Length: 109
Length: 119
Image (cartoon, rainbow over all chains, first blue to last red; front, side, top):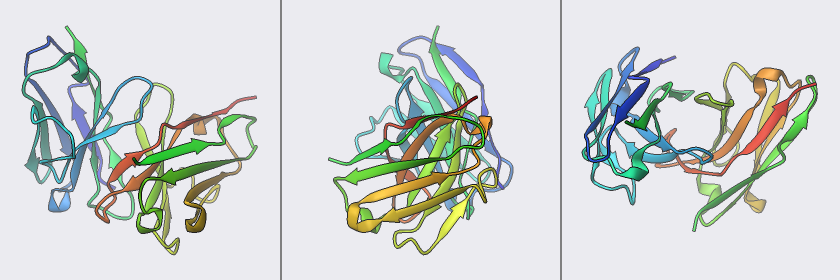
């Protein structure tokens, strides 16, 4: 089973700043089958990025994903007030299961 | 508009059973692999089980294998999760999700239903 480790656990930033979130896999993620989700309190997760770098429909271009192999990054270029949330990475290239990282909370400084 | 609506959650005693349902609309349900994903209070996301579009392929996480059963009724656009021998550690919000692109990629999510296992 591929284990995903996200860092940092919490990121304290101000609106307008740049956020850089990391997701490291215990082994290579095949075909860059790595996704990112945003979750706000009391809501279901929302898919932001799939295939490591493709934005899902309706996701603003301030969200970008990069990386391959075992190291992946989600970048939010300029934080908007609605971006403060918890972010999860997920790998989907290793059957039969899928695994999620432990999450990074982006909070207002 | 895509909708996934879970129901059936509630309070149950350890060792008890519960059946969750998920009603789908706004997309061709029978074309999609479906999954249950849970989130314990204040914790991260954990995949529970998934089922292929026809129902012929099913997988479970080790934590629920032998206790939970996933099924679907394509005629009713519905997904189910039968949960037996429930434990305190099964307490969580259970989300129904549809996989995109034929991959294990949950693209559509329901709002979740809370299952609490407590005496």
